[in-house]
Each structure stands twice: as C-alpha cells, then as structure tokens.
Picture 1: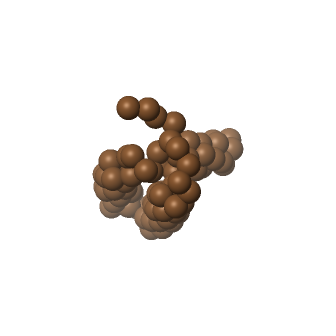
Picture 2 (picture 1 turned 60 degrees about the vertical axis):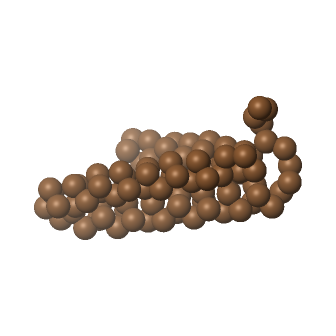
Length: 93
C-alpha cells in the first residue's frame, strides 16, 4: 500500500506543478521557481531530521535527495520549455 501511495504522489508531483510552471513561465517563472527553491529547502530539512533522528536513516537521505533532484530537474526543464514555447499562458492580467 505504501508503494501504491508513493506512485500516486510522484505522478501528482510531476503532472500538476511543473505543468503550471511551463504554461505560465512567460509571466511567472521567477516567482514559481522561488517557491520551488523554498520547497526544496524545507523538504531537505525534513529529510535531514529523518536521517539524523532515526537509526539507519541513510535510505531516507538518499530517497529524499533523489526525489529532490528529480523534481528540481523537472521544474527547471518546465521553466525552460515554457520560455521557449512562445505559447500564451493560462492567466490574463
């Protein structure tokens, strides 16, 4: 059951937010990426707590590092793809 939940979380993480960054990169790339960076720092703090607090925390560290790297790359790719596309975003001002 844990692995099923993990699959759902991973798919949700990759479908929703990077898509928003790509679609609205022309107007909000800097703000969106600021919050990605903040999220990665906060997530890293929680992974660090899990690594230090619990015996044998090395898998938590490696899992957290892999997840952070994968999502970080996804967001950077989404930003660059959105800025290159030239398509209009979903927001109007």
